[in-house]
Length: 138
Image 1 (spheres, rainbow, N blue to C red):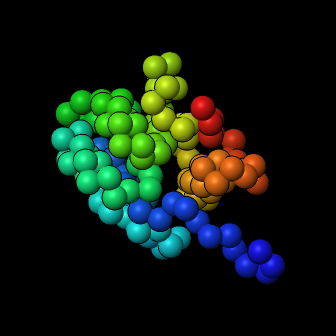
Image 2: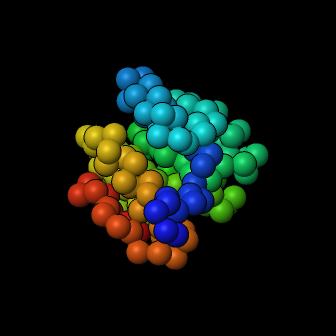
Image 3: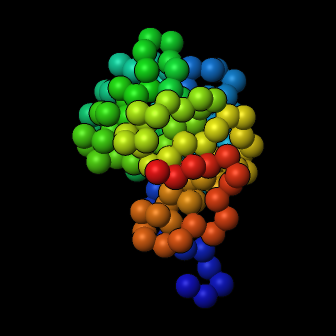
């Protein structure tokens, strides 16, 4: 692609985050970066309803949610073959088999977009350009 940006495979994102300020910031920043934020939810049950539609390209999920675990969200996403990135302060070992990776909190908006770009590259079979330091891919 000469003088242009590669076409993204990740467009439609579900944010699952129970910290209101983080959720609000991520939703608005990612929307400004050109992503379609399908919804921002803070409960496992709400996340499962959106995942059931299958009309998502990526789920960003915290591990600790007010009504349960992001691991349950990840299991549902895996069943629908929807990529998931954990965005969390602590990632348990069992998360490795459920997600594409983890971005450790705290992270900047730039690091979040770089992490999504790294996942996009991996999905497309390309090497990631510059993954952010807080990103671990599984």
